[in-house]
Image 1 (cartoon, rainbow, N blue to C red):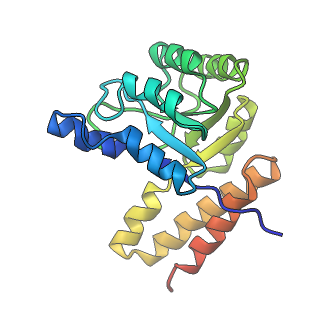
Image 2 (cartoon, rainbow, N blue to C red):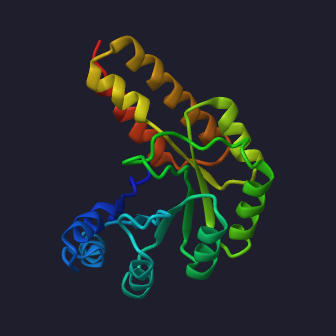
Length: 209
């Protein structure tokens, strides 16, 4: 029997619109509450160093007002580590971050500050926070994420999306194979829950020859 697919709802760009207006509307907190009422399993927020969308007070309000788990996306910095340790969300996803990017453009380089990354993972896990790493779909990287002590992984699918928009069928299939094999490997390592694999299986049906 297949497990139910779990839905995480990202409220970052509700906050982006609010900040652009210079007002308190639309409210990302209200968006999270609406998502919770309609069956979302978790709320995802990315607290960037420049606070371009979610801000510190949003995290405090979320913690007070929603009952479903918070998934905090954060850069590998001392500041973000301290915020996560204080907030104690159920999940933390460590992501790469560039000031000039519009959205996250790729996966973490796990060999960069490798020892510090491992230390951060351990500190978070000691607070009963489950840690995932946002990585490229690459088998060596999946293995390394496991060695570092990550509880889970999130696969970057940006290249697949780019090839799909370009209708580059050859590279669509190549990139999908990387995603599929990385997800399968993670599953054999007792990582990814089945819903991830089933989601990717359905994803495959959308590929056209």
